[in-house]
Image (cartoon, rainbow, N blue to C red; front, side, top):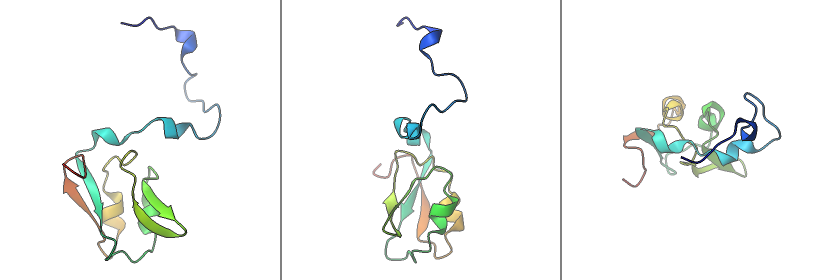
Amino acid sequence: MKEWRAEKLMPGALIPFGGTARWYRTGSWRSEHPVWNEETCKQCLVCWIYCPDGAIKVKEGKVIGIDYDYCKGCGICAVECSPEAIKMAEGGEPDG
């Protein structure tokens, strides 16, 4: 075990500067993953508004996909998507 020192840890509950969330990819422990259908999507961005993890990728005002590095598989996007362009699928990985 590597030696660790308490003084090297970040102080709890503090964000020293912006953008630190990018360092912590949190999508590796989901049991289901969202599958986005571009053809069915109405580009209403409701999924983007409700996603608690910012995992819906948007470019120039349009959904372009899902960032699985940060998606925890909560399924809120699929529940809120009225045209049912997002459906949840079994398994943590989109390709497996």
